[in-house]
Length: 434
Image (cartoon, rainbow, N blue to C red; front, side):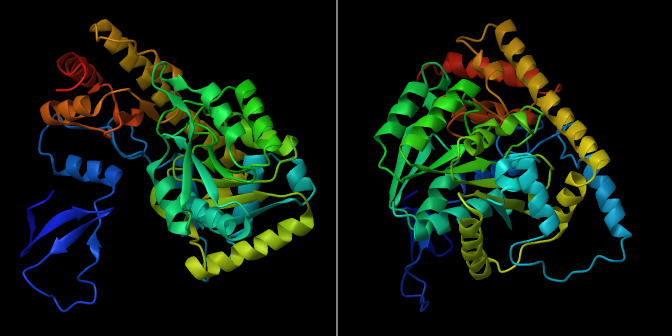
């Protein structure tokens, strides 16, 4: 980027940001502040929007799309919002600092199960947060302030924002544990276990509860049991990133096997919950941090500290999305409708996996593409190189992340053959690099 012009100056890459050089002092106290590069994921979206090609395809940003490529408001959400619009009792008063109680209680039950010992023994608490991102920030802030170990482990690869949040909180010892195995396009289970065993006692690990982002690769139930056993032996503290409960398999109970197994094993942990994907409430920032501790007394103390952190960051959480989720989860008929909506979304994602896999095989695309139907959830880690990704974008106007992650919801019956053809051309033209 060196030498490119921004207004009356030039910018040069320096460190993590960009330094803007002008022809002289601007007189601003901020003239030496670095210009940050755009967010990688939303930058892909912006480029897609600016593209005028009629054939363009967006496989980047992680949001559900219908077969027509349009956003989908869940029918159960429409129903609840219609009820809310005529409810004269609703107002715009502040929620409690820890959030809407009907929401946090229902969210904890959804995650842990109605009969969970953590709930019945009063060892679980929930604090409403600004979706999963805010919940992770809240949890890591508390852990950095109160956990003796200042070492945190993230999966390799992981959701890009994990690194940013950990650094912003204050972690400087940010390490990776092996997760994705390039050779098999599956889980590096042996490497993951070894890295857990070699981690310092008390370290924090962020584990993806289901539908791992960006790979779509999840451990089996037997692998989860072994992973958690080793974690417990090492006295490691886990923060589960639960962004896709129910959105992965269509079954909210199945998707949180790891979390409920951790409860059975008597572990203490945090879990960041997001309702962006499974309720389609992307811009409502609806989520919570669920905490499972050893005793009711410790639970009360931890929650009191979390409330103080919330007060200093956002003070009070938003109401609208939380009330939608609470209404759905606390009403049996609406909850059933929600599960049916989940089935609609997960079934379409599964069909896109099957159809893309079939199209790649039918057109003779080089390589083994079975990982597309083995991975789960919204994302597939294609295994494409940076050069192949650039080829797809430059020649075919197909937008995806540089690491080869694609959003399966961006596929539909009208573009799947086009994408399959483009993938064949990319891997043929750029077997290694273009």
